[in-house]
Length: 228
Length: 237
Ligand SMILES: Nc1ncnc2c1ncn2[C@@H]1O[C@H](COP(=O)(O)OP(=O)(O)OP(=O)(O)O)[C@@H](O)[C@H]1O
Ligand SMILES: [Mg+2]
Image 1 (cartoon, protein in one colour):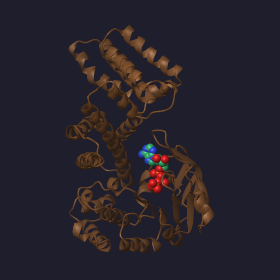
Image 2 (cartoon, each protein chain N blue to C red; image 1 turned 90 degrees about the vertical axis):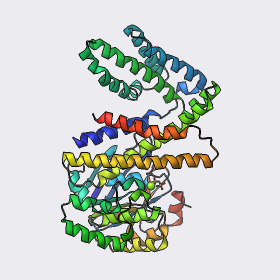
Image 3 (cartoon, chains in turn green, orange; image 1 turned 180 degrees about the horizontal axis):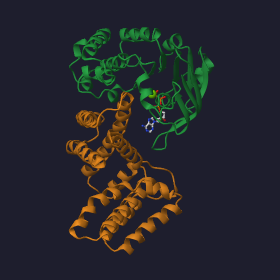
Image 4 (cartoon, chains in turn green, orange; image 1 turned 90 degrees about the horizontal axis):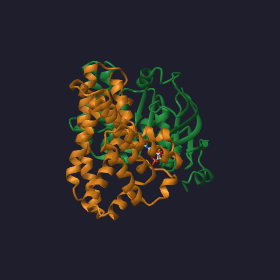
């Protein structure tokens, strides 16, 4: 499903995003990436999804090289950005939700139907006409998540889906991810949620390297990752 | 075409991010005040003459100094070429009014020399040291304040712009037509400006809360998005 070999990423200003690593993710797996602030989780997610081209190494997504057939990749991949502010660029929440469906050629009727369904589910029906950048932090996150889930991509990349939302929304997102029919790769600082949700946990250190791949966290790993 | 546009914006944004990066080298140990005065003089000298020998002399001196201080010449050039390139295209039309090509070339070389000189300063001095040096040189506080706010604010702005482009890309599942792209691009840019203003207000507010005198923030806050817009569209054209 996703294969990355010896990838690393360096930002244009010369900062190392993350150091050389290899990852393999199978279909239907739920993978969590954890690590201290600045350990490279967000950057890794961007590279694994084909949005940033790795500085070294190669990524294949669904058997495709994203540089060769980017449209095939985009159709099947949804990405939730850590900062929903940069993610929401349409002028209303409604436009935000229909952004990908209209590119996929859905009929107006189907779009309206699906939008109201997902808006109901995420409790955003009342703000469909508002400009997204004027919403509260948690509302933004819900809108962003809804606008990805509406087209049911095969792979979800979620950068901190549980951050900045209230307890009820958190539970809701947890349930959705738990039953999602597809591959989910996410980052989070909520270790309990991570352990109960993920099939596999990738642990990154402040040296921006992978220091463990496990399904169970323990004190030693957390200490090494500067999380304890 | 629109890929070219996005690519140019991206290249510009990356260029800009690089523009202010400082690194340790032999020059960093020198008193910032000296560097500020020295490199500013070199920059002024470069743009105050049209004699090719003088300009080449300055360029060679700058790059020689860079080489001697262990700064990569290629890197310095990479960080300096964009503005001269802009100016090249801006003055190119003067050829229609009878100016020789050498004029266009020399004009751009002057800019190249001036920017290289300032780049050499920036590459060897953290930006806040540049500010302190200017303060020590009795440059008015108000001016320094707006310079500092401008620096932080445009840095945030450009970093955001790049992030937004990547986020937009993440949801572009189909190649859209030319006009559609222009329309959407225009919309997105407009929205970006609007949000930037609001963010600018927040940055100013945050500085105020921490007791930073704000000075002329208001003006620069409005002007930067304007300049950025002009420059971005200019890159596209
Ligand atoms: N746009 C950027 N330009 C330059 N450096 C960056 C940029 N974004 C991130 N970095 C740097 O890359 C490294 C990894 O950052 P990243 O955002 O991937 O960390 P993270 O693990 O997601 O952190 P957090 O838990 O705070 O979200 C950090 O050292 C950071 O400073
Ligand atoms: Mg992150």
